[in-house]
Length: 287
Ligand code: MLT
Image (tube, rainbow, N blue to C red; front, side, top):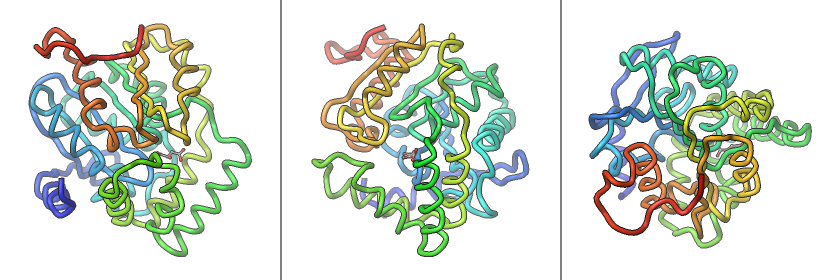
């Protein structure tokens, strides 16, 4: 979709609610089984445009801008990923939604783990995309602090530019690269710095994996270098009721590089393959 279109659509169709002390902007499209899409860093709900288009034909899709990102950028950003999870639980409560499919990509996955720990009753199914269970190493924490200072000094675009080679595969379209740049550059520098510090302080979710009982779909771009397929396979091995899908020729932001495969996987996971009414394709992974 042309960039101007998604900016216009995001701003025209987003709605807002004041929950947990923050005025959150979010997309709420379609009807049916609810799916909560939690965006990656350093992006916003704008990264889900293709998924919203594809999934809102059958489901209700809620895609918020997390505190400090996108149109929820007033204030100083998240103080912890637990706070981000509490914001989302409060938003679900505001929408009168008890249980939803929670789908998080990368930082969105870290927040999905926090949501599971703090608000397990909200989670009917889980999609963990291009994410990892482990905490940051001391070296990774140091790099996050450097990046937080870069964001504060030079703005969100500088952080995005530095991360871009790792966010997308080498063969990603120039249009996808531009889209990532544009979404990231629209973010607030304080929100980006705050999220970096919150990610650095996140706990190790590895011990939680064996306790996950809800159906779980794990998706990873085969060329993801930030949270590589080995991380996805380790989560798959540890979560009993899980399914793994590796998407070929896609990097870390697999939903942007392979939007159809990504959306179809979620559609089949939530709605069941039969209900799709089409032959072939489908999830290539295994339970
Ligand atoms: C993301 O895509 O959300 C980030 O790359 C996550 C991270 O930096 O750990």
